[in-house]
Image 1 (cartoon, one colour):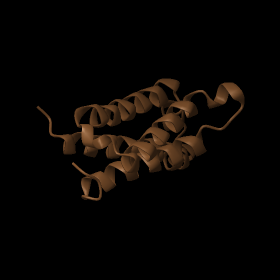
Image 2: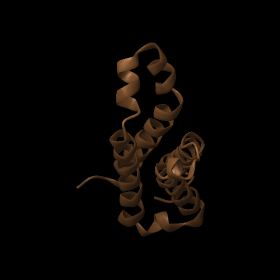
Image 3: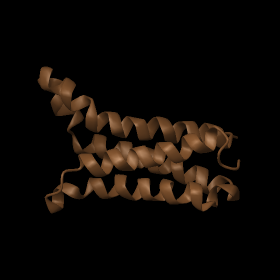
Image 4: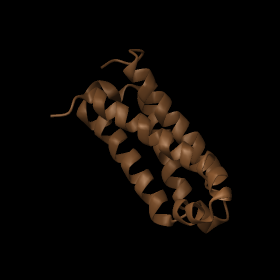
Amino acid sequence: MQSPASFDRAAVALSVACVAHCMVLPVIAISMPFLAASVEAEWVHWTLAAFATFASTSVIMHRSTTREPSFLVPAVTGMILIIAALFGESFGIDETLPTVFGGILLATAHIRRLIGKQPH
């Protein structure tokens, strides 16, 4: 069975992947048109969001001590922003800002938990 810390690490990595996808990959994609097509594919957004949400939800469900507001509020807010970003284009909203802020909130909640500022 996986330790709770491994789920935290996975959630951090996936949150950072969401942020990198929105911030770094478009810059790289400008110089490589093939990469632009692949990073903008809708399935990439849905896959990253699904894995980040799954990892974070696993941490929340795995230990009752993760249900402290100091972890739960930023983690859930981050997940909501990442998921909301998936639907942003439908409403004419750029998905970058909600994804970046959501990823940062989510990663911060998990990092704080990993370094001991949150109960394990």
